[in-house]
Length: 155
Image (tube, rainbow, N blue to C red; front, side, top):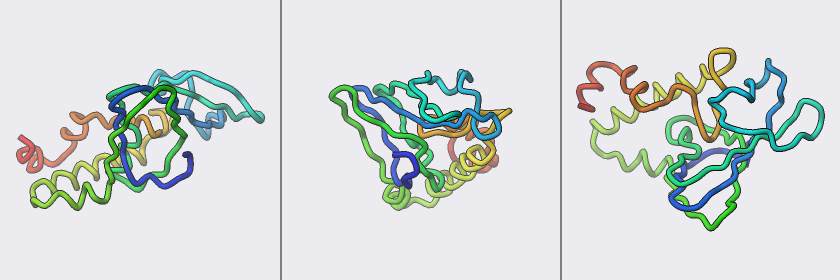
């Protein structure tokens, strides 16, 4: 749920979920909800300025991938809307499982590049990061930003 520490990433393997994020629509606080990068539609409103935005999440979707690469706090909540299954990837166990120094070096550099994008993701140039998306964290973009030595190791 929103505000909880993110210690794992999840991949939806079957079914569907509803992801809901509470946003203050003050442009100085949160991005424009009509930004296509959000892919969300307004569901309801509570007090003035605050709205819930929801998005259906299906098979193959990563949720909270950022928890693998940075200290992460969940930005919304997710609930199953059909019979569903997820694969959980515990961030600490995953990183400890990288025994080979080359794999650790690649993962560490990937995390550095991912972190740069998390802290720079804000309007007007990008949407704020969420459990569903962190702007400009496509695999190719991250690898292209890595040092040439690490790029050679990746191949």
